[in-house]
Image (cartoon, rainbow, N blue to C red; front, side):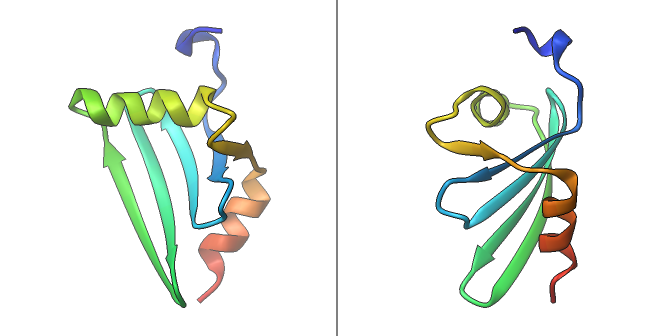
Length: 80
């Protein structure tokens, strides 16, 4: 399946539960990192190859990530 066939946004989390992702497009995503009791939210615009590869891996590498729903992502984002 090519990026052109993906219906964005796509929601993923790392299997360790420490990072949650909303992938807007092949060049942009939002990440919620959980570090202890803190939450850090970043929006990344992929302009370099490592960032583009990260988006590809988030979408296609099921050994690293799990699919989640929009509701799961938004509930993590809403928690203080």
